[in-house]
Image 1 (cartoon, rainbow, N blue to C red):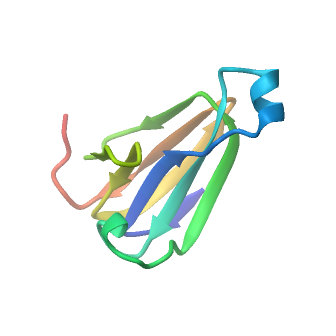
Image 2: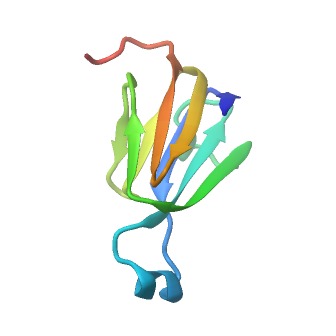
Length: 103
């Protein structure tokens, strides 16, 4: 699904004990959408949060990404839009970023 957004934070969530007992591979994760860059530096809540239950990999295609060591989250700034798709146990993020891309 395509979302118009300025930035996203991508992170994993804690599993409940029942889910952890069933498998040790998959993790729940979230993608939080924001209307401003560097949302981790501002007290504003996200405009939307997309959650996934069983994910083993998130694929980021053609983005400059910042890794936040304090929370183990990823931040992608300067977006025009992001397209989020789940296929099996993988989530794919693609979209358009205004900054120079890393090749």
